[in-house]
Image (cartoon, rainbow, N blue to C red; front, side, top):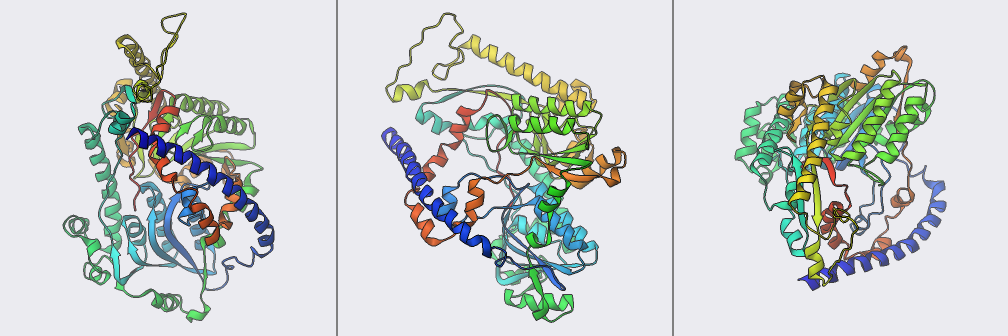
Length: 598
């Protein structure tokens, strides 16, 4: 087994190097192709908005917070998936533009396998509901729908499904992978220091199953979020929540045909997709030949507006998305974000700021650097609000709790006030491969902590004290920011995660509202706030991969790389272990549950 592990491990590196060489060859071809394609990109656009336009929302794949530079994705190339995911900011901008554009008569939702966080879905659905209140209609169609598609699609005036379609309405589930047996097999032992009964982010490294406190908090969290989604679906479908919940619990809905969903009142009509053009034309009041279908990228113009609004007196919306780390291109890199915050603080034209947080937390060091920069911004006398997305937990809450006002979505996951430290010991791995580390030190603690030696009782006690002090700092920080007594914070801390509605009841957030609500609050706190523009930060700079990936669609290019990266999936199994070894010891990170709705 050990020999096979190392052969697979080495083959992954060889495969990656070969793929890199081949990619460079392909990249040269693509760059040449880009020059030739530059002149026809406009012609291949999905059209312009004109009279009787219908905006098509293709709810397929992942929806992320906002556009970010991406790394080369070899696996995506093999699968032929090289498109950028849709963004919540882009979709919301397009829906608002469609609402105000007199030439856009309707929105047509095509469901095709949506994946997003619960707060993202809630925000998207709320924006569509606001569109309907303008008097314009929404139709939705699906061959197949999951929880996420269906929740969003129920906002439509009419919901259609293929007669042979599938509705996989199953309720919410969460999963996480446990790695103890894997770590044991490769000879890595993880020593843990933590504070918080519910701080279960460490469990996958030291256990093979979920603890009862972790299971209990997750059960409550999912139940509360499900109730939010369920109640809105019930109102839209004019069916009692309890009736829908009973169908989900008792029936295997996804094993029933679309036609059967009509009788259950979960959809309006079972029809084939080719009939939808005529139905949409009738709803708009024109012949179907006069319909003009356009995508959200044509209707919205957020990128142009952001470029224009980046100067003059303005309100800044600063995005903090991903895990909090240092020295990384992905996630929230404090070394990148802190200078942006201080620049905004020193810019006299920036009158206030909304910090948009969508983060499960991460490094305590990184969190504190960001928190200090935000305090500097507030010392300038400028209002600061926080808008929480899918997550604002642990380190995400650390950077949020001192804001002047905190807004959360009802389905936001927040709290997780707790700290842990993971200390890998790879002595077993060294023994397995025949390596014996030897140490010489001038002082007893010179080689502590070490990746190759287990901590003794005294050292573990010292580490626990260090983590406990960090937890006490976290408690004091929350108490000061939320104007609560420390003992009151401790009662709702212990690393427990809360949904947005419960967090408001507990005093961890001030209001239930979206990003726009936070912006308007800041606007109200600024002089001449109604005249202020809104600009987003940090600026998104496309990397080389972003520029070329949309052109790497051909079958030939995919086949060229496929063989070279056939071992790449092996590397995915080592991802969690590599993260463990790269992280700083002290972490404020919520449990890594996969609770995206699909």
